[in-house]
Image (cartoon, rainbow, N blue to C red; front, side, top):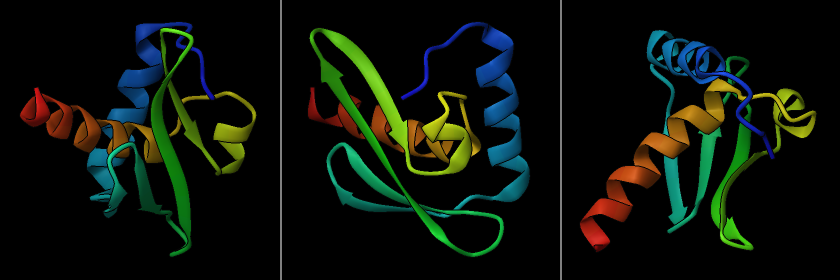
Length: 86
């Protein structure tokens, strides 16, 4: 889970995701598989916990609470899907 400490953190993650043309696979609403730079896949979960929106990624950066490009990529898809559900 990452906690957004600055706008720049998420901007960097989004820019890296764009540069890598990151592949995101839909598993189910709120759960996505995202391809990393080495070709491996990470699980990203977007959900609410206690009224707080949370994004978790199984990559090393995500485990240590840093916004990663995997989470930014999945979050982009998640937000789009959520808007369609509303």
